[in-house]
Image 1 (cartoon, helix red, strand yellow):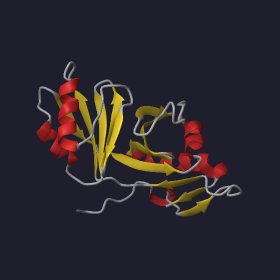
Image 2: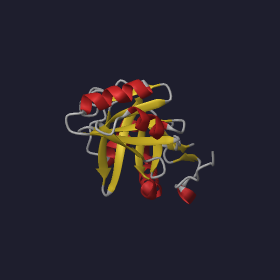
Image 3: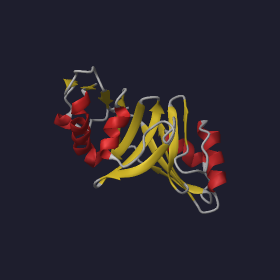
Image 4: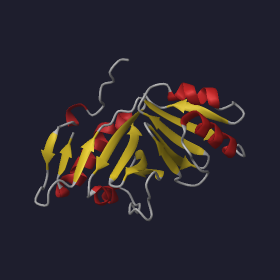
Length: 195
């Protein structure tokens, strides 16, 4: 496996930044999963696609907006009607899903080369994200494993809650540096560490 270069470039500045009067508010990182895949179901074939995804990955997804699941090194969530974003820390998820999903059930698109994952974690993660997106990130409205597709200005983002105070965001690789800078700026008032 060839190590992928980070699209963050010189915007990546590890260390502590911003206001730490109340401690570290968030930790920002780039998790770098090896597989990011989109599955789009044909109309009326959602149940068959979800069953195939579950059998191939162990993810128990539902045909509901934002429905998500996490199973070991894999996660997934709905990004639109009949569309799911699936992530694996290892390579090969696109092939696994292509073998599992029949052509008359849905399509599989490998986005690994075109998306970047950014993680925000910590007690002020919801606060920071709420500055950028018009979404209620409180656990009652955005529970564990829940996800959505949205945008910050012209930058599309898919967001999943992967821990009590942790969110994984997936953005176009070409916008990753710009979005990272925006996220860092939004986190300055609560103090952030870049790891």
